[in-house]
Image 1 (cartoon, rainbow over the protein chains, first blue to last red):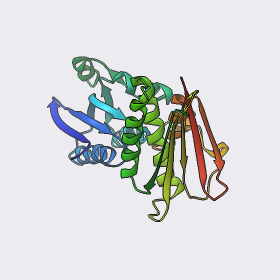
Image 2 (cartoon, helix red, strand yellow):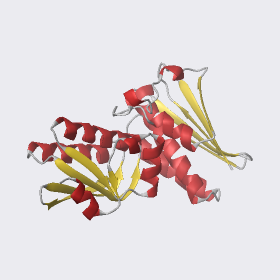
Image 3 (tube, each protein chain N blue to C red):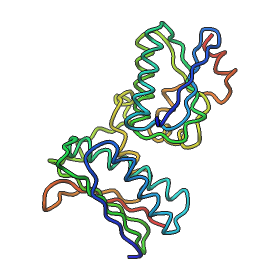
Length: 115
Length: 136
């Protein structure tokens, strides 16, 4: 069984990925990478990652968030984060990545920010 | 010492999960709380992943040796690999602006953030050991 499930929703021109499970070294990180590559391949470059269902992330998973962010930027798009758990927020603070990512608690607010 | 457990794990990514599960069970048996166990979990995952990837470089014939010990002080973890070692001072600081967008290099920062003591030394029989202590 995979460590992570990634579901896709569309809200206007923004693609929301709902992540449920663990984003860790191995499968979890690879699944996120594949999902982002696929979206970019389809020309979808406004991406909101909903992390509400991510119970666990390690340094490899954090690294994958950063790689996703840079990959999307490179394609002229934007990647933002939604609903961080306290744990993920702590890890992003430790790594100073809260200064890099746009982070939102409310989906509606996140979606308007892409406009 | 109130309890000790030793494990030898193969150099593959699945060992990270196995080490974390075993450490979680052991720490809970020792009556440690959720926050404490969560800190240990992260430190174990990061250190075992480093040993598999950077230390043993996935070489199947090399093991990752893990020791978990409940001590009077708290909880002590050692992780040994059989690689050629590294200089801790040469590891770039991932929080430097120039490194913020790098994909790798945050594991040691996490280990240091969640454990009270993190130190590395060369094992006399070869390889590197990282020793970590979480005080209670």
